[in-house]
Each structure stands twice: as structure tokens, then as C-alpha cells.
Amino acid sequence: MSALIPRPTSEIAPGAVHVPQWLTPEQQRELVTACRAWATGPVPIRHTELPRGGVMSVQTVCVGWHWQPYRYTRTAGDVNGRRVAEFPQWMVDLGRRALTAAYADESAADYTPDTALVNFYDRQARMGMHQDKDERSSAPVVSLSIGDTCVFRVGNTETRNKPYTDIELASGDLFVFGGPSRYIFHGVPKVHAGTADPGTGLASGRLNITMRVTGLPG
Ligand code: SIN
Ligand code: MN
Image 1 (tube, rainbow, N blue to C red):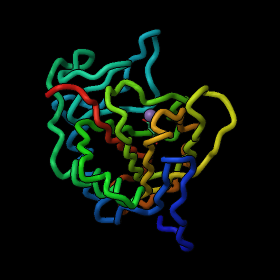
Image 2 (cartoon, helix red, strand yellow):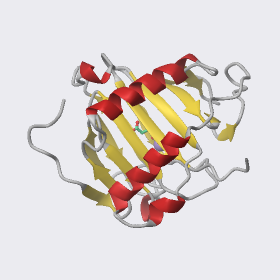
Image 3 (spheres, protein in one colour):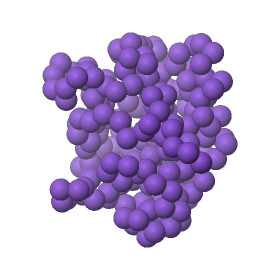
Image 4 (cartoon, rainbow, N blue to C red):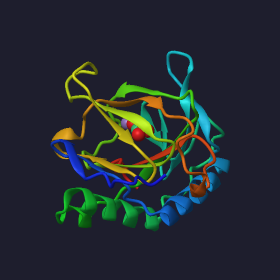
């Protein structure tokens, strides 16, 4: 649901920028359609198995490269052995526009994300505090949210512990973390169920897309 009072862009930490309502409703609908298609295959969406047992509460489908804890591969050995969907050029372009919106500088021209993790959160799903550090590149991570609003917890680069800054990521919001914040601990402790506008095509739950540069060859 679009906010009656526009929320301003804010730098949560150096290099960590929140741009509320960056995606238009139409872009959100298009992304939901694309994510639904990726969710069906070639590698279907699944709860990722954790190395020490158990599964993640979010459901994930990958584009470009397949992620499993804690590496990227082209084929999904832990799901069905198939090669993941190609990373489309329109996502590269979207990632560049996102970086320009967040940083308002020229750095986006060279930004070429080659993987995206698409996470679906139902009302129970959470994500614990972690760093995105399986990439060999330190290029920024671009995060797009659609559907239910969540609490997004931003920590520091040293430990997973307090102090935290909690912000809300709502449908259409962009969050970029790069530079000194590229390796911040972050997580999603809460999804506010029922806050989504079904007009995006997502009747319930939260979709988050993070684009990254793996730094891996070919
Ligand atoms: C992630 O950390 O990979 C996902 C973050 C989010 O869901 O906002
Ligand atoms: Mn992450």
C-alpha cells in the first residue's frame, strides 16, 4: 500500500541506503510475474537445507547462479541438478538504475550483477542476522522488496550482535548496501502479515530480490 506521507531516502549507515517506494506498482507487478515463472523452474523454489540440519524458513529461487550454503554454482546439485535460469539483461539494467538512485553518482555504469536470490517470506518466515559474503566481489548488493512490510535489521560489520538499527521495508522499497556497509550483518526478524497490497499480484507474504555480483568466472 503506498504511504500517504512519502518516506524520504535515508542513509542508514555509510553506503547503506534506503530508497522507499522506488519501484512503481507496474514494476512490482512485472517482478512478481517474473519471480513466479522462476519459482516453477528450471530449478523450483525451495526451502534451502542448512549444513547442520534443518531448513531455512524462507523459500528461495536463484537466478544466474545457484546459491546453497555457502557457495554459488551454475547447477543446483541440492535440488534437481539443473542449471538455473539465465540472469536477464533487464535485471542488470534495473540493478544499475537502483545503484544510481541510491548513490546518486556514476558508479552504476560498471555494475553488472550476475545473480539474484529471490526469497519468499510467508507470515512465519524470518531471516537471522548474517553477512552476504559468499561472493568474491565486494560490489554492492541491491535489494528490492514487494508485498508485506517487514522489519529489516541492520547491524554492524563486526558482530551479529547489538546495536541494531531496525527499519521497515515496504512494497516497492529499495535498499542498497555497499562500500563500508557491504559486509554489514543484516536480517529480517518480523514480517507484518496482511500489510501487502494484492494489486502487486502477491496476495500475501513478502518477496525480496537481492542482486549481487558473484565475481565468479563465466
Ligand atoms: C537477504 O539478506 O538475503 C534477504 C534480505 C531481505 O529479505 O530483505
Ligand atoms: Mn543477506
